[in-house]
Length: 410
View (cartoon, rainbow, N blue to C red):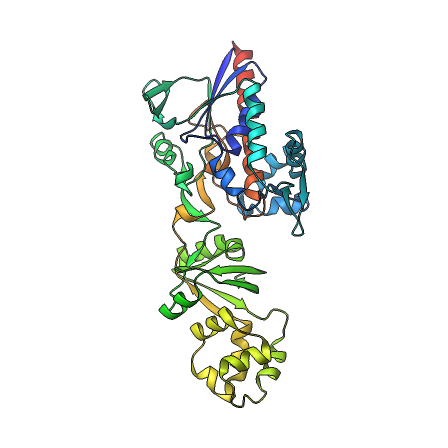
C-alpha cells in the first residue's frame, strides 16, 4: 500500500468514507471508541430504520435550512435513490411508507450493518475497537487511549467522523470539540436538535398524564405549522411533532428567553362549529362531560385546557367564544430544551467556513471531517442518515483527490 488513511468514527459517515477508499492502493484503518461499530445507527433502527425519504430532491435538499447549499453538493453525488440502490447491493430491499419515508423491508438496521462490515472487511478495511481518539502528539501523530495503554498512529490522511454530542453512551460524546478547538479549528457550540422541551406542568397534570400521547393536533410556531402528534413527559413534551419545530423553538428560547407554541386541538373543526356546539345548554353535566359530549375534547386534551385556560373561561356562558379560541389556539409556554445528551441529534460543530471543497480542514492539511460533527442539522425523516452517508462519501472522495495530487507532485 502506498498510502494509509485513518478514519476515526465507525458510524455511517466513517464507514461510507472507508468504502470509498477501499479497493484502491490505500490502507484503510477505522478506529472507534466503542466495543462495536455503528451503535447509534443500530439505535436509530430500533423502531424501524428510516434510511431516507422519497420526496423530490429539491424538497429533500430544502430540509437542511441554512446549510442546504453545502449539503446539496453531497446529495447530488449520492442521492436518496442512490442510497436505496446501495442498500440493495448489500441485500437489503427497501420500501416507501405511507408518509414517504423509506425503510428496509425487515425494518431493522442490524442486517444492513452486518453485510456492510463484512464487505468492508473483505475489501481490506481494518477495524480497531476501543480506540478513543484524544488528540495529536507533538509530531502530529494521532493519539489514542486503548485497553492496552496509549497508542500513537501516523497516517497520510485522517477523516474525523466522530458524531455530535448526543447519546454519549453510544459513542457520540462531543469530546472532539476540545481537541479541534485547541488546534485552532472554528467549532460552533453543540446544541440539541430534534429534542424535547421543558414545560412547567402542575403536579396534578404531571402525575396524571406523564407518558400520554397527544394525537391529531396542529402545532404552530412562527412560520411553522404542522399536524401530527407528540408525547407528554414528566419534564415537558417530546415526539415527532415537537422535533419538527425544535430548531425554531430552541433558537427562539436562546434569543428571547422563552417560546410559546400554539396548539390546535380540533384541527378538523372550525371556530364557529365549536362555538355552536359549546353554546348548547350544559344542564347538569360537568364542564368536562359537556366538552367531551359536544366537541370530543377529553383525556389529556382536556387536561391541557385545565392547565392553561383561566378558570373563569370554563364557567361563564359569555366565555364560550374564548373557550373555542383556546381549543383552536392553546398557548403552551416552553421553558428550555432538554439536555444535549437526550437529543436525537446535534446542531453546531465544525464550521463549513473552516473547510475546503473536499471537506478538508484548511488549517489542518490532510485532516477531513464528515457526518454529524459538521455544523448542520435536519429534521427526522431520513434526512439525518442520508446526509451522514453522503458526507462520508464526499470526505472519502476528498481524501482520494488529495492523495492523487500528492502522488502527482512526487
